[in-house]
Image (cartoon, rainbow, N blue to C red; front, side, top):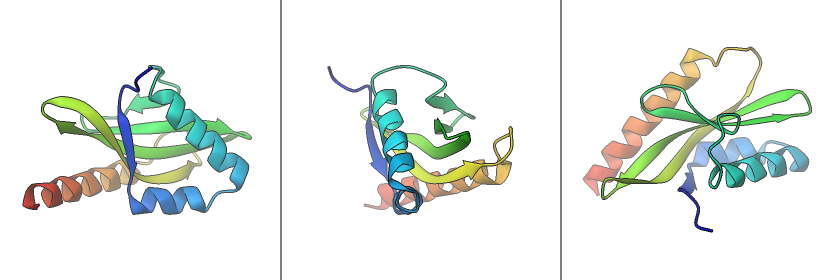
Length: 114
């Protein structure tokens, strides 16, 4: 079975994942992999026009990995994870969404220059 999209982790997303204990990191990677094959808002949810989040609930803690789609030949094939947080409130912090939007803009600007 072919995944619905590929995933690229940017350095800040990798740093976030590496800062977590092994079991938590494994659970997040498991959910990311699962989200590639199954459409499930509990795993991968759209936050606004451009930003999505990988969602993991583990040991009563909510982990979020922000991401966006990168298009190749008008087909959405790549999801780029920007950074992650341990969510402390019900609502996703707007500053984290803004940060993901800024990273997205920078990523796309660099892509057009190359």
